[in-house]
Image 1 (cartoon, rainbow, N blue to C red):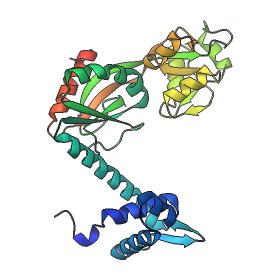
Image 2 (image 1 turned 90 degrees about the vertical axis):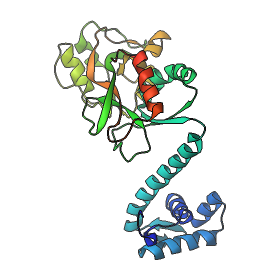
Image 3 (image 1 turned 180 degrees about the vertical axis):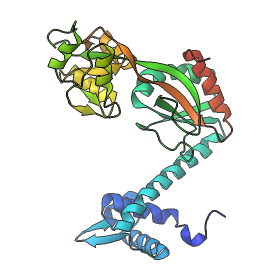
Image 4 (image 1 turned 90 degrees about the horizontal axis):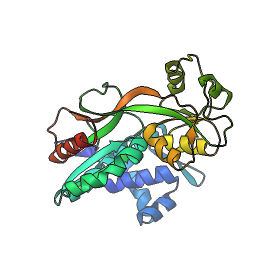
Amino acid sequence: MIAPRRYLPSVPALLAFEACARLGSATQAATELSLTQSAISRQIKALEGQLGVQLMARQGRRLTLTQAGTEYVRDVREILSRLAQASVNAATQAQSGVLTLAILPAFGMHWLAPRLSDFAQAHREVTVNLSTRLHPFALGPSPFDAAIHFGHEDWPGVHYLPLMPETVVPVCAPSLAGAPFAVPADLLRHPLLHLETRPRAWARWFEAVGHPGEPPHGMMFDQFATMAQAAVHGLGIALLPTFVAAPYLKNGQLVLASDKTTESIGSYYLVWPDDRPTPPALEAFCAWLKTQTDSP
């Protein structure tokens, strides 16, 4: 038995609560869930009665979360998401193997996605589901079979398949006067674009090319794709992985700001939990990935 039944709310009650918390209105939640407003209100009251705590309060015409409700809704959303993903997996498992991967957006878009058709043709029995994640997370309790990880072998409780080191290049719009610059210090006369997850990328690049120091702050982005577009529109110089920069350099939207490149601060890995048997679909995917990289 997972837990006493009195602590297991019904799914309709959780859906009603989540919708009210997100929309701030029982009327809008009722429309979204194809129920009546009174049905939504009854579900919320039943949930609060079961838990013995007030989750929502009315302020004027809007419903607002109490402190307990604010904390509870975060867990509810995660649980509902995992339940939905488990249901999708169960529904498709009968007809094919399912492989659910967490990927980094830029690596998934520019390196993995163009190659996946080859895997799909070789393994028609496997359905690959992809979901983007920007930061490491607890892989064990997640709905993912494996994840793409950037950095070092510092993710606990996983197997590692090395994929490739990351090489970066500074790029800018063709209209930037003087590009490519012969001297790295010349780049400092222009705005430098930064990535949230790599706050010291520029400092490491300048150090690697023999110009150590602390580069100035600049615009911050959460993904390489948006940073690349900012560079295309002349907002500054971006430091991009070669596989992200390549299509922009090929079509002339970007040019090299310097001909100096360097290994970045880490490598890409496929990681998967080491406390469970490896699913056949993941074994097939690992074997295929080794044909796409230099992995032994």
